[in-house]
Every structure is written in structure tokens, then in C-alpha cells.
Length: 271
Length: 271
Image (cartoon, rainbow over all chains, first blue to last red):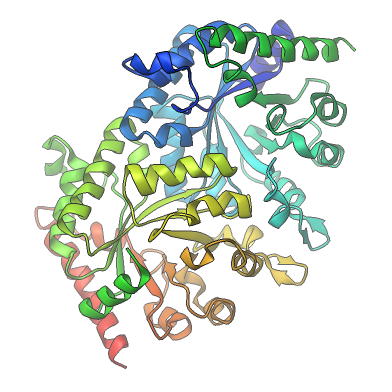
């Protein structure tokens, strides 16, 4: 999917919501555990109920890997379902990968070719040659960790490197990499006040923003400091939406939570 | 496996060799492609031929994920084979994972419980709460990226943070984390001269050292600067060993390459 297609979809749906599909068998409605593939059954119900309210889905691969081959199959079924039924929706493999060059190429193949995701999240610690292999894939997007939503972000990301915070160095440096136009960045909603500075470095790139909802970030703050002319934001909510209810009405309740966020986004887009 | 068991194994085998099982279907002997599971067939042959010469195996998960569910099955068969036939061998899931707390716990379960590896590699960028969940597992080891073997290591890892290189800050900071005795660190053999400084910060922890062989690092230099009283080193070679030959004799030739490294290690241990 091209960035332009994503922007069009945002304008059409009046939403820049991304729903995180972080499925934990201990948290889904117990009646689904009788299904052949409870994870996929859960995802399918959530997707069917919410796809008109969001522009992206983001399965976090950890939640699938934890269930081994079964989990990997659920992930495959989920991405196939999305690509077949809702090819207009942007898909993110939240995998936070990164390795030396030939190995990163294998990861890129895993997520862009084998699983046919539109994008994958990567970690920047190993530098240019660990990220560039992802960037070579046409109409695919690489979403690099910049400033994450967790407390541990203050351990290294905000430390001063030659006078500038590490996360700013990471963003600045990555602009010179081959095909850097395919880069998006992760910036946590819990650190919205940092967005103004980030926009000085990358005025246009899309940001994937986790941390609204369960982690306490504010949608309004994020938009105030992070929004661009072509929106430039994907706001993720996972637990806050998908675990809205633990009963038979779980998909309906998830849709209500998604609708609430989408309505706020529509308001913001109008103003 | 406890660190003491690993040290005993090193002393018994006179080897601190780790063999990287980075299996690329384009590089293995073509006759194996007829097998039901060519990746596992390749790994089994390599393990059968080399297990007496090494103390650890390290499959890089990227190479398995690139083949989807099939690849994940090959990984599962490989770790099960190792745990059943050679439980004395230390196993490393080279996965370079790391995410916010509840997600890192899922990754830890994937590699320590579902796949029953002895250790997993993790990336430090997201800080303390992204690594600590891995450290809580008893007799399991978390191998954190410190100074990697690739060129991109110079993009951020060696940059000065408040007067100290980032990789040193990462190592120093991690010492204060809960259960930090379960930490090992990745330090590339291509940067052996940095090892003396690293040993000042962590005189005892094991280091996983990739980059000997195909990437050009020197075994002697690594040992000179990095070895401790209880060895404290696992030297990895992947391509240099497993792709020694592309014919029927591939396992035999791999064993010869492994033997050559093991013999050098035996010499070093004597001196």
C-alpha cells in the first residue's frame, strides 16, 4: 500500500485509528476457547465489528509466538483474512525486529512476502545496515522505534548523545538511509510533549503512536503536537478496545470503544 | 541450564564454540530439498556431526520465520531434537526481541517455555522494563545486544552518551536490573579491541561473540581481551561452518571446520 492510499483511507473513514490485535487466551471471552482456533475467531469477530472505524490493524507478533506453531497459524489466518476481505486496510506486523544485513533481509521476507503485511516495526540499535534491507521493498513501510511509550524509554532513548537526545539522533540519522521515504516512526502517546520537537526533524513522515488508552496517553495532545497536513498519525489502541468486554457482546463492545475514538478523531479532523 | 553447567561443559569438551544454525534453503546441499523438512534434515546432520565439538547451538529465528509455519516447525523440531539428544548443550534463540513489559513476557514464554531454549537474545533500546521480564525465568539466560559485529554498530552504539559510549552505558545500566545475574551480552568479534574496556564493567558475565569467520573477527584477539577465569566466552560461527560444503559431504566438512576452531580453542585453554 502506498502512503497516498493510506491518507485517502483516513480521509474517507475520518479515522486514523489503528487497532492492536494483541490476543491473550487468558483475556478473551471464555466461550471462544471451544473454537478450533480461538485467536483467529476472536480477531475475525473484532475485525468484522470494527473495520469501518479504523484504517489499520496491528497484531503484535509476541502474542502469537507465545503459542508456538498454533499461534503462527492464527497470525497467518488473520493477515490473510485482512488482505482478502479488507485490502484497503493498512497492516502492521508489530515485531520490533532488527539484525545484521543478510538476517534482516530474511525478516523482511517473512513479514512482507510470506505474511504479506504492509509494514513491520523494527528496532534501531544495530544501525543503518540492519534497517535498510527492510526499506528496499516497494510500497512496504518500515516503522522504526524512536521514542517508545514505556518507562524504560528514559533509560537510553532520552539520554543526550553529543548534545542531542538519542531518539532524535536515531530519527535524524535515519533520514540519510537509502529509501528513507519508506520510514515511519514509533512515538509513544505518553510522551506527546516531545512531538513538537520530532516534527521539526520529520515534518511529514507517518508516526505510529501507541499508548492512548490503557497506558494513559492523550489523543488531543498527540494531535496538537504531531498532526501534519496529511494527518501523519496512526493512533493505536489495543487492550482498551479489544478487551472492552469478556462476554458474548465482546465484539459489539469493542466497536463501541472504537467508535468513541473514531468520533473524537472526526471532531479533530474537522477543526 | 545453569552457568556452572555451561562452564563444566566447556571444560569437558575443551571448546567454547557455538554453531549458528542459520539455514537458507538456497545454500544447503540441493539433494536435501527432496526431504520432507529440508531445514531440519540439514540441522540434524550438522548436529550429529558436530555436537562433540561445540557447547552451544544458535538458530537465528529470522531464517525460520522467512519460511512461515513450515520454518517455525523446523525450528521446533530442531530445539526438541537438541533437548532430547543433547540436553547438555546450551541453546540460544537468536531472536533479538524486546517490547514493553507485558509483551516481553509473551516473548519470554515463546522461547523459554513453548520452545524450551536455554537463552534468547534481546535488544536494549526500550530499556529496563523491556528486558526484566526475560530475567525472571530461573536457569534461563538473556543475552543482550551490547556492541554488535556489523558496520551499523557505529551509528549509535559507539556514540558518546554523557561522556561514555552508548554500549558501555547499556552494559553498566543493565547491571542494576532485577536478576541481572542472568544476563549475558553480545559483543562482535570484529570489535575485539573493545573487549578490555567491557571486561572492566562486567568482569564475569558470559559474552556471546559472533563475527569470527565469515565476518573476519580473530579468535585469538577475542580471547586475549575477553576471556575470564571461567572462560566467559561463547564464540559463534555460522556460515563458516555450516556451509563448508554444498555436497553429500556437507556434514563431514562442517565437522572439519568446527574441529579446526575447537582445536584452536583447546590450545588457548591450555596456555
